[in-house]
Length: 220
Image (cartoon, rainbow, N blue to C red; front, side):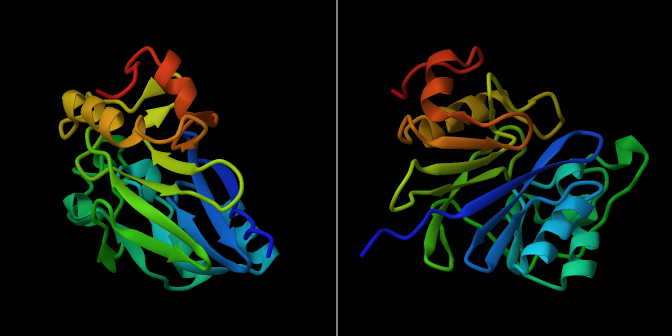
C-alpha cells in the first residue's frame, strides 16, 4: 500500500502582529493551531473545505496567539482547547497574556485539558509529539510530526524563527531557558525538518542550526 499522505497545512498571517496561525487537516479532520486577532480568513477556510475541527491547540498564551479564541469557538463550535499547564491561568489574566499592556484586555474560556512534554496527540492517522520549549514564555510548546512520506514537520510557535528566536525581554521570559530548549528539543530533530514558526517565513532545522545568529551549532 502507498504511504499515507502527509497532513495539509494552511497558514494564515493574522492581526496587527502578523501572527502565523495554522489549520492542520487530515481528510476532513483538522486542528487549529493558535487563533490571533481577526481570524476570519482561517474560519472561512475551515467552512469552505468542510473541515471538522478536533481541537484548538495554543502554542502559548500571549495575546496575539489567543485573541481569536472566542470568535473561532463561537463560529466553528465548541472544541477542546489545549495549552501547557504553565500558562493555563493566563487565558483569564490580561496582565499575564500581555493584552492589558496593549489596552485591549483579552480573556478566553478555560482550557479543556493541558499538554505535557513528550505527550502524543493523534489527528486521524497522524501522530504528533508535544515538545515543551520554554523561554519565550514558560509554557511554550511545539508540535512535531514525522509523516510516512516527505520531511518531518515542526509547528514551532514563537520559539524558533527563520534567522531569529522568540523575544525574551518579557517579564516571564528566560533567555537561557530558550537557548537550552532550542538546542535540546529542536536542534536534535532531522535537519530536513520543516519549521513552521509563529511569525515570518518557513525554514528548516538544518538551516537554523547552520546560520541562525542567536543559536547556532549542533546540540552537545
